[in-house]
Length: 524
Image 1: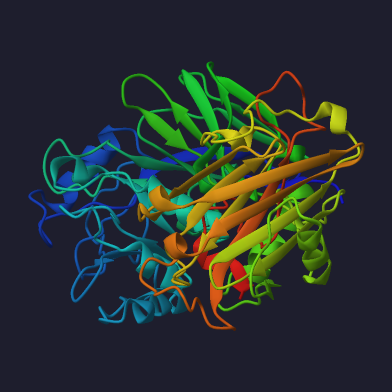
Image 2: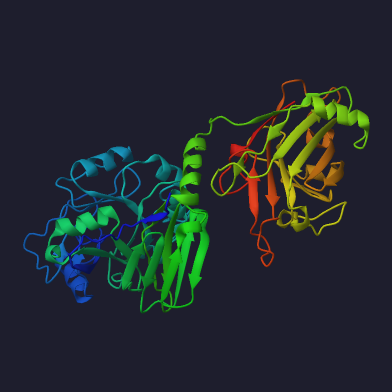
């Protein structure tokens, strides 16, 4: 399937367009502003704005008798403030009632044809005027203020890029707005939105509203974007007053950077479900494009996996540990017999797209009253290309940059805390955990290589893994630990790069192994 970018800046064929600049959030003496409605419009006209909206608190805008100068005034505007988090209503035919249930407010805005925006999410001393959990819960809003100018003068942060990025990473494609929220002198011209509309409709408020609803605009605090072009999977941006342009994907991973006023990027091999541009100009001036959803290729496979496993209670793999009275020495023939009786479970996912790994990685487990043992067998047809630096014995926390195994144990089954164990192909071992229990953990490893494979056996003492549980008699049959394992395979990586190989996962945990809520289970 060819990779394409879903482009919010698409243009109709044989149609000319204009970029129109405007602010959606300003207050006058009709609520808590210090300037008259006319004075507010005068100030924005002097700044060269093409459109504007008066959004006084809990009162629908009325432009009767006001001189708009050259600007298009967006009707039906209001900041819903009473009884809860603030929401911006633009372009509605009726005022939204300030229901305490903010979902009802959004529903009212949508029912009256309006644009619904979450205001200043990181305002106030706790930086949490609109908690992320509420942003997740609410449905139907078009976007949020990723920049709110008045917050520069108040407690909290003017920026909410963090919450925007988290929503986008969860597949919530919402737009980022930059607004002044001006109340008094010298609060104009801090942030604005630049909408792309057909030239023949540039005096029509409905055309501007349509562009804002569909994401056909960018947000700015001082950088002007000259062109945004998409051809297939390639994005090209030019901005004559930009000094640097960055492209970001899922979970705020920077995909590309250009130390100039233009950037070209092919998303065909990007490990991301979307990308967005962030531009930097003189001083603190910035601009943000809306997200481009990546369709097809790596992104499509990973998006499907994310949707499948998004539910906290989605099915998880389970590794059944074979219970024995005691676990013999790691090098013994008796142990080999026990391994043959243990159930094998396979690493199933390429972490980039959820596809099956091209090589086999099998896991087995044994448990007794005193010990827990694992055996990991790794198929490797390119043994001569493996990268291993850490010698046998105690290792270090950077072994994930070698051909290695990462093993995760949530022994409290709390889906919050876990032990992380690193083991490379030479049997080097390193463990960390948030509780500090691993200081007393005793571990033994042995490794074996063949021309086409390598294997690790790991023996752990149970008591340090369960410091709050008496041993003996040990965990009863049926006890479950949160469990996950991943394999880093560098044999097919570029030898000139530190770490760009393949990572394979036993459970689907998304972009990071450090996600205990998504681990599978080890059943003892």
